Length: 501
Image 1 (cartoon, rainbow, N blue to C red):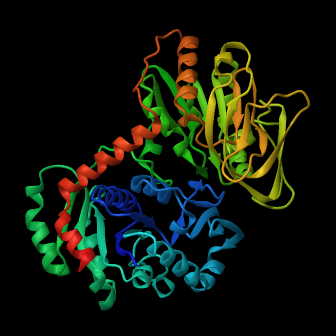
Image 2 (cartoon, rainbow, N blue to C red; image 1 turned 90 degrees about the vertical axis):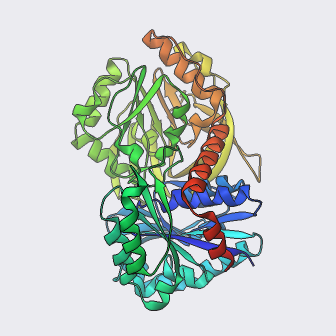
Image 3 (tube, rainbow, N blue to C red; image 1 turned 180 degrees about the horizontal axis):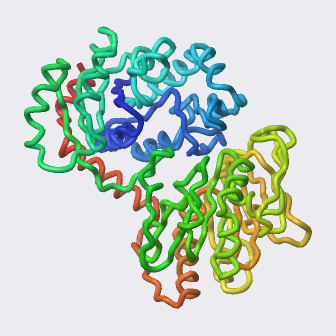
């Protein structure tokens, strides 16, 4: 069976996912067959495996760091919030249905066999498992039925590194308070403390570190600096969502929907020096961007209503009339049509009119579409003609089915990857408005760079060729950079000693 180490945090966004991804790459570099694991994940960013099963994107990213294919066993339970009081519950990649939080908490213990089976199955195939916790292990109201922090550490008999975020202040109180609120047997599982996101001279921390070790009776195994690495983030606390400033070149404004999902679809634009990506929550922030992107959402009707009530819909339509390109992905694509109907109550009973920018309508169905796909852009006309036949690759996750009006041409001609050769059409376009269900459409270098070059031509600015690498090559460089930063700031000898006892 594999050895394991678990990364827990004092709070959400303490940096657990990043530390776990970095350790995954370090262990891979050191010759260990390594896999990530998170028993229960709550996030709207998800991924589709080769088996067309759904899992948390953070574990898919960590699998990339290990250079292995993402596997649904790495995240057996995924919760996708649908309201403030409930979530869609996904077990072993399959949707069980929507559940109120209070009902889910009553059933949590029933999922322990599912978690144990997934973990032990992975442990039979790998040398090392890097386990990630969720939130804080010291949530005293939730501890009784915990299956993701100390409860998971007990299932895996895993030693724990506890990570605190110094950037938001109070890191000593975070770490000491978390340890104090744990039971003695849980405290004994913590084998090291990590201070994350530190800026400045480490010498200033020294007296505090001594006191921290004395109070907690735990060793500090590293002070990790605020890292300048570009690793895909998972949830609504991601710092990339706070970008507001408009840069030079192509101004790409992403509508920050209240229930935004899979915003990592925009990550590949990092490779395009001509493009600045910013996130917009208010009509006054929109201005007149070159491109407006409507991303995915977990609740299309509710977010369409918010778009209308906030004034952003009117602002987007005004920008469109002035020449802005509009691009919708998944839920954002659905919003661009004439109507969205949910007769089954999949997300929100009822019907709402869309933005009427594309000749199509969406009807929600109870069965979720989950596919990995690849294909080519259809035959486009006008200034975007050069995008025709460009290769695209990605995945679909959506509940609705979109029906194009007669005579409307799809944007992409696809075939399902892995398992069958089913062919299908996706999305549609009309002049400067594009819509697709395909997550990851901008990851393909030729499609993305051609799209940006056309935008530059429309604006009358010269196109910079960008970094000559694929998005996958770029991600590999970022993983290696993250691993080096962690090697420099963590005591890896101590961590290996913790793992091997």
